[in-house]
Length: 242
Image (cartoon, helix red, strand yellow):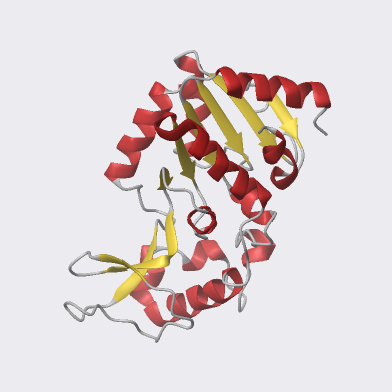
């Protein structure tokens, strides 16, 4: 577990940083009780998340995919932001335009907490996208009708999620590259750092001389790369950095 000396050192680094980029993953949402929807947590009707969250699965059986996302939305709707989410909002208010948050999570909890300078690089489960006209809109209806259609062109809607086998949107990639290359401190919270492109962010930050701090429940494949690794729950450690 993280020591008091490590926490004080991380706090000092944050206090002296000029531009901070923060990357969050499933660990921060797990502290709110959000399942990972991968592996055992993602098993639903004997389907794995990796078998359902694909363009091919949606093309083959959009009803099945939407039933799964309705189930996910019902679960996530019962969860609330935790102290780690709230602390990041306070940090954003302190740093203003000197901070940017990148999240791999699709649960919308950062937005619910109040984060505004934010890239949801894997999408947002509370948004839908038209398969024809491409319009993205927020929709918190539970459950969504199956199959939902676009109010503008009446084509089929899909979850606004980056599925397995799909690339991140160009605008999100550009923004991530920009904030990673302009930061002097990267704070990585609750992610093992094995899913690309986020898996390369720590190395990219180190290449430009930025300091990298990691907060995770356990050590990760990136722990030997970072400058400071704090082990513990995000909801406990992130507020201490204030």
